[in-house]
Length: 195
Ligand code: GLV
Ligand code: MN
Image (cartoon, rainbow, N blue to C red):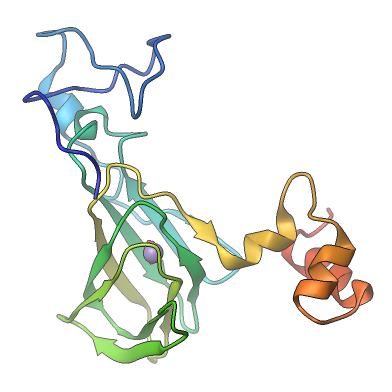
């Protein structure tokens, strides 16, 4: 869903002091074939507390993607691993199951929960901006390949509300979730281990 390109290539110039929507372009003929290639998702990403590893190949680490309106990720799931509910404000996402059995789901703005068990070889799509997740429900590891129609989809995990900088005031969170300030603080501690 990114804007259309206005030229053949606009390889990201990470060092430019010019700020534009996306990255400024490298000067003509200074880009290299490597700018259009990446090994960023050749291996799993960094592990997180939910039993998943997310790796990305987007315009921030693959300069040739600038202005082209697409990018990849991969997600590797341990047993019971969850890619927790999140949205991508700038992209529709389509996934391909490389291995394993997952429950994939998204919720619409009418609050309909669209979800399905998906398996190796299956493709599933998450419409732009809608909250979605994938959960490994199989007996082994799982992995998915993820494509986006944005060079930088952006990720907003729902739970990040509890771990903003600075914090959203406890009373706002308690009211929003119809719970107590103590419970809000407990959730914050679980999500942001203080060590
Ligand atoms: C999967 O939902 C992802 O955004 O990587
Ligand atoms: Mn996603």
